Image 1 (spheres, rainbow, N blue to C red):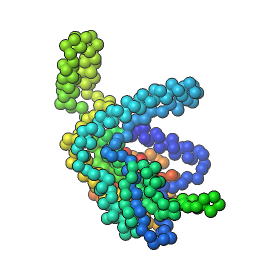
Image 2: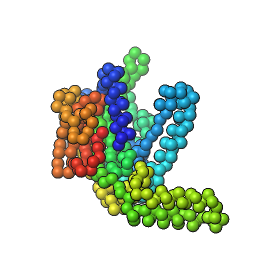
Image 3: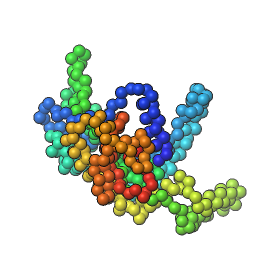
Image 4: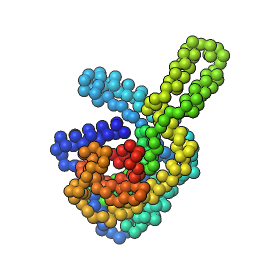
Length: 350
């Protein structure tokens, strides 16, 4: 989480230093002027679970060495980022296999009907995969609701989460002097963090299994290849690394990903289903809440263990979950639901 925390700190500092007026995440709901039905577009650009992964950029190289540094840095960054993305994809294979039965798009559409029809006059519901596809479907002067959604594993593979950006829009119309621009009637961001697994520990069983896999792969090589010095040294290096009890980032993620696809596969399925259901409950309640986002700043506090700039108010608390609303800056009004498990020593809702 350190990478994500540092990014948020930099964003916060830049906003403060620039002195610009920050637009809050929430815009209070304004009822449409028409009684017509409102089409709902569920924008889910992915077909299966994805994962965050460390992304490196060349800003430091650019600052120090100019264009040459930038070109070299970008080349290095591209290689590292590609490698990190490929590792994340490998870790997702087993997890995705266990989620083949879960139709995320369909579940989302079902909750739209169940939860939002009392807030807005829901018309046609359609799932789209891109803004380009969405633009082709919207008519001039149409009032429509968009839910832009992503569901992912966190960067350490310990926590699944869903984030939805909701906006009710009035499409512009006309041209030239008579042109009416697009307008927003409501917007906000909602995030749901599921169960967080404990930090992984490399047991002797893990070590034995990893060494066995290395040997298995080695003996699959041709006899000539097995006798080569390069192959034998490569095998020794892998075994030496496997026998170390300390876990690096890649090793920890591999163990956690395996846990999600085996002993915790039922929990993952339940987490995603419950997440969709609770997100729509939060969305429906928030549309009815006419509190202006700037008023939250008066009562915002910093949760235990969180950075000082992290201000929020408590919306709801149960035996298992806590729902907070951010109270300041560009995220003022945004809502986040997280597990109420203080012993996990992992910060979410950052």
